[in-house]
Length: 243
Image (cartoon, rainbow, N blue to C red; front, side):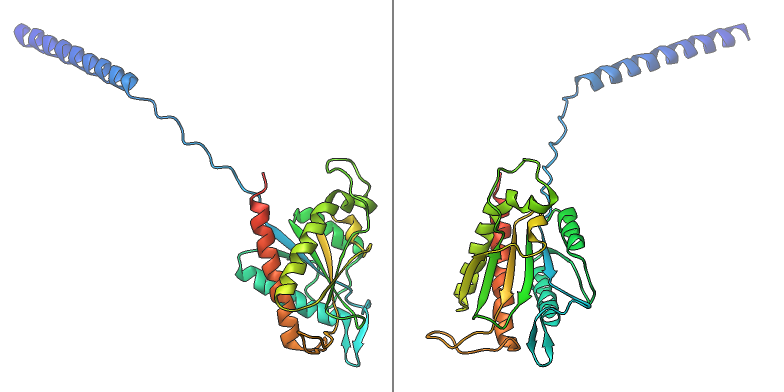
């Protein structure tokens, strides 16, 4: 009985020593494993988005285009079509209105600025002139980064707005729609903190390369919204290449 107890004690001591030795080897092995540096995190690209501002709405009817068509209704229909084309291209769209509702100018600007959009397209229509009129703010450009009051916020984006206007004009030229470029303070453009262009649709007069088309001509409208979508897709490509 005394031998058995002594033998068991020796075996327990041996097992304890063996366990300690194995733990020591495991610890050394863990310390000698090569250290794998963590994978660098990919830089997060800001989301490219576009604001479509269908002018007027509700009690504000805008211009009377035909006996049965008001400006507010035409630009809303154009907004819906343009939004669909941009969505098909994977472009995120924010609209200032999606129904016949009244939206204050400050609310339109607030929505656009809060979204931090890469561009804002303001849709208008008129019976005067021919083709499409493109307007950018009449504000003189100032260096970006300066503090500007709400009423002149667009001044920091005047150069970008002019480039966007040129991009749109080029796309419209490809579908034989004449373009008139201008500078005007179209409310609430001067409050926008992103590149902004007012796109005013007019009837298409007969010309050497064009046939006359009224504002109600669906094919004419399609040419315009498809050109706008193509221009904004190119604008996205340019935007992604910015440092």
